[in-house]
Amino acid sequence: MTRKITVLGTRGIPDVLGGVETHCQNLYPAIKQQFDVDICVIARSPYVGYRKSQYKNIETLALWAPKKRSLEAIVHSVLAAFKTCFDKSAIVHVHAIGPGLVVPLLRLLGKKVVFTHHGPDYERQKWGFIARQALLLGEKFAVNYANEVIVISEVINKLIQKKHGRMDAHLIYNGVNIPKPLDAETISKTLGRYALQPKNYLVAVGRFVEEKGLHDLITAYQQSGVSEPLVLVGDADHPSEYSMHLKQLAIKTPNVILTGFLKGDALEVVFSQAKLFIMPSYHEGLPIALLEAMSFSLPVVVSDIPANLEVGLPAGTYFKVGNVADLAEKIKERVVLAPVDYSEFLQSYDWCDIAKKTASVYHLLDKSIG
View: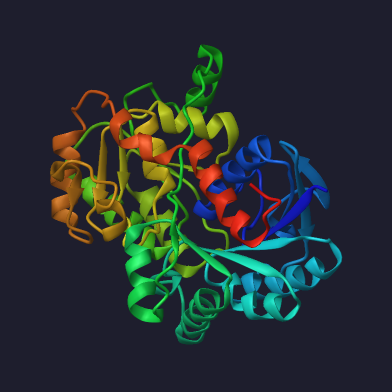
C-alpha cells in the first residue's frame, strides 16, 4: 500500500516567494519521483489560486488562513493539524518554528511527526514581544516533541543542541536546481519591461522585511557610486511601516528599480542576467537565494552572518553585517568581476540527494517509505 506524507508550515507551492516555500516546491516532487509515496502539501489560501490542485504529482490543498502576520501561521497550522486526522497520512512533516507550535497536538492526535528547523525566526526584527515568545515556544515544542528533527545548517544544529539538548537531528541542507536554458525572446521581453540590459545591473531578492537589510543596500548602493542599476525583486507579504519606508527610499534613489514579486521565467530571467548578486541579510537559515545566485554563476556580496559563512565562499565575498561603508566598498570591488564557477560549492546542494536523505528520515518512522 502506498503511504502518505502530509506537509504543513509553508505558505504554499508553486511559485510562492520564500525560503520554506522554495524548499518544499523542490523537495517533494524529487521525493515523489524516487519513492512510492503520496504527498499532500497544505497551503494557505491567501497565497495560492486553488482550493485543491496538483503540482508535479504532488497533491496541493489550500486551507483558510487569516492574512495577519501574527496569526497566520498558528491558525493555519492548527486547522491543518486537525485536517490530518482525516487524510490517512502516515507521517506529518512540519516546516519552521511558528507552525512547530502544533507538533505536540499532532503527537496527541496519534501522528508521527518530522520537523524541519529552517532557522531561529524569533531573531527577525519584525516580531514584537508576544510573537517572539510564541516562536521561542514553537521551537521548544517542535524540537522536543517531534519524532525526528531535520536542520538545514550546522549553525541550527548547534543551536538546538545547546538550547534544547536535541543531539540526534539530521543535517540535510537546502538545495538548488541546475538552471534551465532561457530563450533569447523571453530574456529580451522580460528585461525590456524594466529597461534593463543583460549583465549590466545588480540584483537582490527577498521580502521587504527589516532582517533582509535592503535599507542598508540602498544606502550602500548610493555611496558606492556604481553606474549600473540596482534591481530589488520582492515585496512585503503584509504591508508594514518598514516596507512602505523601504519603497519610498527606493523611489527617491536614482537607478533603483522595484519589480515586485516575480515568479517562474520572469524571476529566472531577472535573477540570472544580473552582473552582481547582493544579500545584506541580518538573519537567514540557509539562504536558497544565495545558492540560486551561485547556480547562475553570479559574483556575490553577502553579509558575514553564520548561515552565509557556512556556505564557505572566499573571504572577499563577505562584508560586516550592518556596515554600510563596508558593503559599499564590496559592491564597488566586485561589480567588475567576471562570472564565477561555483560547481565545487554546489555539489552539497543537490535536490535528488536531499530527497533521498529526507526519505531515509521517513523510513525511520515507517519502514514502507524510502
